[in-house]
Image 1 (tube, rainbow, N blue to C red):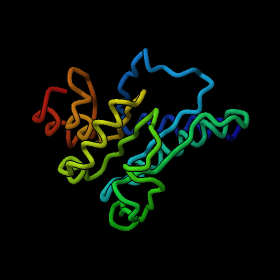
Image 2 (image 1 turned 90 degrees about the horizontal axis):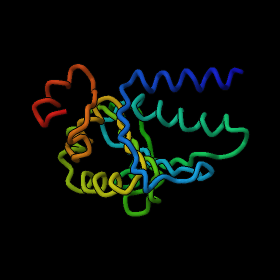
Image 3 (image 1 turned 60 degrees about the horizontal axis):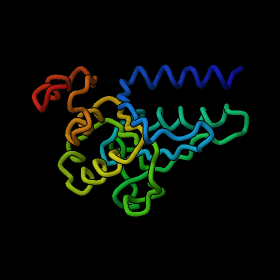
Length: 173
């Protein structure tokens, strides 16, 4: 069907954007029937496709599940102020760090991640929230954020080719 073809395309695109998924903890595994809460972090300078593709994948996974919701998504940022993606697209979060429901899955998009990695409050939220999540995902240069948060210690990961040297200089990835 057209919907399943679109889902397949979205999954392929997500993989093409170098999604890094950290393994969940067995003791935190939720029953298959549980609706998973997904927190998609947004920040000034993020790449829109690094946010939109995972959001689309989770949306179509639920849409193609026969009417049964399997993912509930939240767009989260430090404040409710709109963020600017690539300087011309505005996205308004629907929750803040303070009121975001505990996510089962945390998604960190790529883009200009320097500001995120230098923002103590944001990095603290990522570390605390990701540490309690079943899965932590990043897209492209979002892997540098996961690396800075300590999630990639001892893990193999990938990122944008232009940032690989930077990642290798920060810690062994």
